Length: 395
Ligand SMILES: *Cc1c(COP(=O)(O)O)cnc(C)c1O
Image 1 (spheres, rainbow, N blue to C red):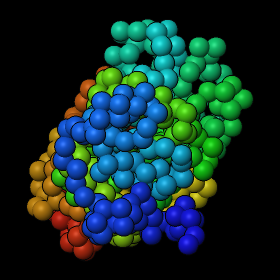
Image 2 (cartoon, rainbow, N blue to C red):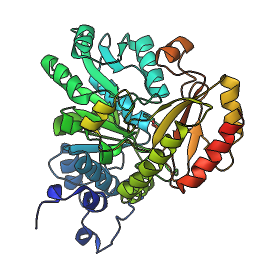
Image 3 (tube, rainbow, N blue to C red):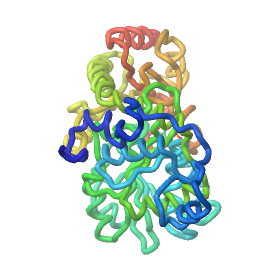
């Protein structure tokens, strides 16, 4: 038998981290919906707490259903150890707190998930951890912003919601010169389309709420990194802050992961069709999609992503009220934040996901009042386009 690590991606999403022979032949991973685990003897309890015997103790410290998910995501990202959290933000905060102490400095991509921006502001207010935001377009630009107290480079690519890309290999090269870990939020791409650890980044994290779950029924986060760092996180900012995932949500993610490649192929194919048509619509000012050969960062996309994925941002002509009028005219396309679900979802970043970002920062990130973010679903693309175009025609 070959090693499970040598298998291909479509096989790993279904099999990694689970062996039915160890679970009475159960085809799917059993749901261990339990808070705690019994010890055979007092000595066994002692040994488990001492780390001298493997075995479960209490579900905040580990659970078999959760462990299967953690092993699966680690294999999919090509990393040593995975950890699961109760939300994407629980994952982001556990990692950022693990990497910093008071008065440290974080270098971050310009354009960021709204709540991650909120967390960084909180860390500055409470612990004087300062953050610089950079477009990260050149090595010089990154080098010039690194300080002696920089302990983390945090990158989102594609950037939410502007869909700009950052060259991960370039960032990792500069970071290595200074021995600073690079953390990548890979939510938009998933390991099916982009694997940052293969580009020498150190930690990759996800809001698993999105494409990994894929069905709009769970909020969760996942992180993968090397054994040493992830074990430290498991024993500190995961165990003691406690943002763990529930076994049932881990079970749902294991189920969602099995169809990740099939779903993303359809999301992407649909998105490619919609982009072509959006670009031709008279009421659309601009379209941002990394898989579009005319996208400013198409060269970076070819280096590090296999395809453009299922998210499109576009600007309508007119004002904020025009953008809202268009959104109010949709029929089956759902007006909702989140992304990566079977349903096509649409939202208005400047008044929704990025409303917490002060207007001046928002405009610096190119999040205008006309910008709309579309998460293309799994419906027939002709129907998605028909709904979008009738709403755009209202303008
Ligand atoms: C949704 C999202 C998050 C936060 O994840 P939650 O699961 O909502 O806590 C972080 N980063 C990106 C890019 C996201 O889209």
